[in-house]
Image (cartoon, rainbow, N blue to C red; front, side, top):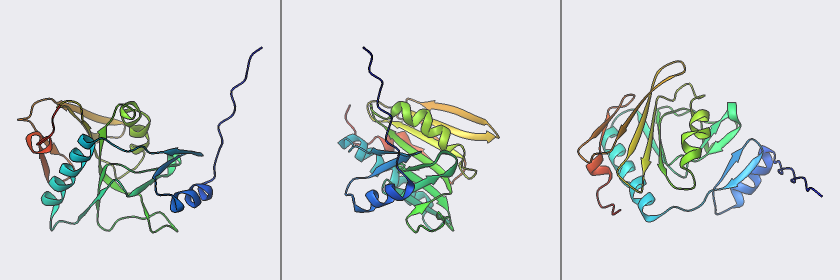
Length: 191
């Protein structure tokens, strides 16, 4: 006797927002599925914090806004609501119509990789991000070793990939006046 898997429960966007606004936890909305976002490690938190400081200092007084993990992003082509670890947007920011808590026009996104999300961040999530016309730079930061992956948009359907494994390396963000020194980013992280 075989057992058929139960169909995934689908939720409307209205159901998602009803749950999300009442919840103390964050959730992604992936085309009808509501996914609980798990907490991070101290290393994840330290790397995210360092990244925020580096970007805020580099962009101080410039026409950009830096957002951290609690800012929701809407990706209409994939029907995805997500919370990147860090996003940078040109001012004025574009909000989803009818929502004052959801943005749509990142230039730059960074994710700190965890064992449970690394494949998703590299594959499906990056595929969704690439549908945003404003999106130009993607940084993936490993929390378990010194390793940063940088993707820079070159043209339609073209992305240049560069990886860094040396604390002396510098990552130049192509779309922003920002240079990330890996020594500064990984300062205080013990592997």
